Length: 319
Image (cartoon, one colour):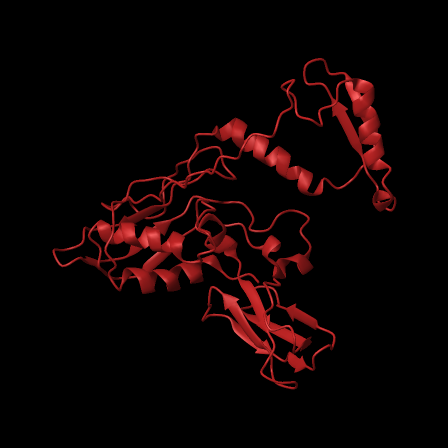
C-alpha cells in the first residue's frame, strides 16, 4: 500500500517536533544504499539557515565467512572447468525449471573466455538481475564510503525558549534507511532519531510550516515499463528523495470475533490520511481465506473485499 511521502513526513514531524523531545547534536550520516545520482550534495530549494542537520550512520553487521575445508577451499568449490560446466547444466536440467526460459553466459573477467553459455542470445527480461548492475554502478560512481545526507534548514535560529519563528524544511537526498527494515522493525525510530537531533539543536516548537522537500531528485517518480497494477504494492512505490518506510504501508488483516463479523484491517504504521473501505467478512473455521485489496492511482483510499477464515487469528502483512 503506497502513501505520499510528504504527507507522512509532515504528520509524523508535527507530532515529534512540536511536542519538544530532547536530543543529541545534528551532524552525522547514514548507511550507504542505492541512489540515483553520483553527486552526494546539492543546493536545496530553501536558502540554508543555521540548522544543518544530517541523519546518523547505521552500522553494518558483518557476516561470517563461509566454512572452508582443510585445503583452504569451500567444500563445494569446483576443481575443473568441466566440473563447473557439468554442475551448471545439472541445475538447469532440474524438473522445476522445465517450464522456464533461462539464459546464462559466464565469462572470465581476466581473459574474456566464455566458460559456459546457454540461450545467451535470447532477449529476456533482466528482472532482479538488474539490481546487480545497479549496485555495481553505485559502488563505482559513489564509492563504498558514500553516505546519504538528509538536512534540516531554517531561516532563523530558535529563540531562548526553543521557538522557531518560520518554516522548518527537511531536505532529502534519497536516504532509504528512514525505514523499519533498517531499525529492527520499528516504524518510527528513523524519524524519532532525526526529531531528536532537531530538538538537540534547540528547536522545541515550530511557529511556521514543516516542509518536506523532495526536489533533489528531478526524474520521474515511476520507472520506465512499470505496470499500473504494480503501483498499489510496495514494489511500485514512487521514487522520492525524501522517503519514509520505503513510501509504503504494511497491511494487516485479522478475523472478527465470530463468523459474519467484519475482519479487522490495520496498517503499520497507522496512517490517519488513508481511508479503508472494509467489506471483508469472517467465515467459519475451515472456510477459504480469500482477500483482495485495491487502490486507485493517486488515491488515499483502499478497498478490502471478500472473506477470511475465523481460525486464522493473526494475518501477516499482505501488501
